[in-house]
Image (cartoon, rainbow, N blue to C red; front, side, top):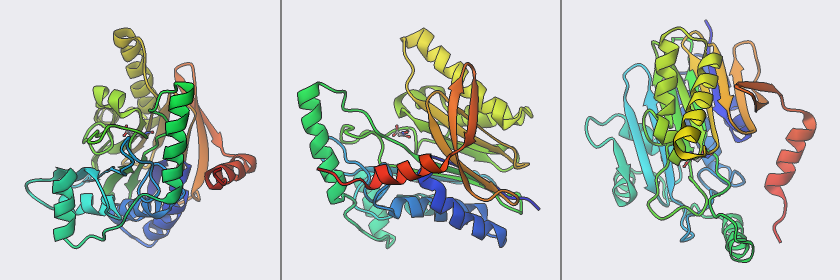
Length: 316
Ligand code: SD4
């Protein structure tokens, strides 16, 4: 039997590797996505998710996360949650509730506290320093504050044909307090149906949510369109629509996986992603837009080394 897992960005590599071990031994897609996302949340040098995530304009780390089970359509999500270690696990727990499945801010924190989730100050010294530097840059160079953001989004199929998806992010760097992006919003940042497939998006949430891109991708996969064609169609058609209507389109990328284990990616910017299945070990790929197609290649050793160097470079 086959399994498969696809994830946004290089930062998911270690998590996907752990999840692959789980899947090989018959683990469930739900456990696999939660395990993988937690590893990204826990790693301090990934500065757009969980611990070490970049703060909002008030220097507070507010996190968004979601979980969806493709067999039952159970969804749980948190928005703007502070001071809890693993927002994705809180989201998964919420997915078991009948009511109140999407909680934000204080309400999400109260729920997490009552349910025994671990508290943690998620602001690292490094993230604080990046924030301080950014404040100076914005002042001196008149730069847009909304830059530097990535969501981990992972879609998985297990050997029992169960599918699940999870997302987690600190959202846009320098966002306004209370801002929630697409990542915890069902149909925008994520969606999955075990009878069809699943998708997860990353990029400018304000634009992704205008097109409900993940739901759109799953809907197209239902018509038996290959996930690669789906991913390209969703990204390029919607980018063009936005340009027609609004004159511009933000960065948008999507990963798609169907219930046969076929997969695809679409992006309008340079984008890294991870894929693994029973035949292919977890690997980092780099994707680029080329006309209305997305091309991708395996990341080179130079790229991988320079990534590690960049995320751990000392800050002055
Ligand atoms: C958001 N979509 O909060 C997230 C951020 C992201 O690549 O994924 N950026 O808008």
